[in-house]
Image (cartoon, rainbow, N blue to C red; front, side):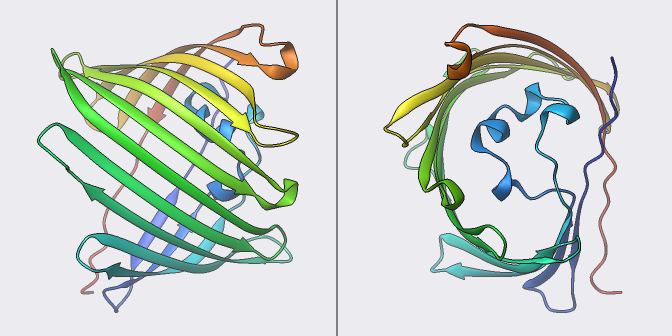
Length: 237
């Protein structure tokens, strides 16, 4: 059964170099962490309903290494839900082997309250064209007064100039009523470029082990065709 999905992101520069207008079809701060981590496995009926947001984004730096952005905007429904979001990010290479990335985000939604997210990833080549990746995420969910966490291990390889493969395993947990595992999953994404740089196909077999099902395996296979439309706007109009 095929179900169409549409997502968009519009990033418009303004006459001021550090100020941008960003309009997005969904805002992932209010999407559960497990759903974000398993996004490629899911179809539209399985996802939390997203809401379009519009915001002005101010870009700056802390020193020479940390990129900082502040967003001031609203979810575009009635009545509008105002929000503020600050993201600090740093990328660095401690040696010739590892590529590291750290991100800290704080946000406030008028209807949902405060939240914070810490994310860290490490990537390195492991030979024969394979890359290994590890990502860790910790998020404070204000509405439930608890932390949720995820640990994901993945590998990635470009098979040829058209296809890539990426196996992953992951564990999701929460801090209430005590630190515990809520689910685990494994999946494999085979991605194939059908035409140029805008038409792709994906085949994703997956297994999930949710706590509410006594960690019994739940299998799925997803086939997806993606079309990308992108462009740039000259700020010197």
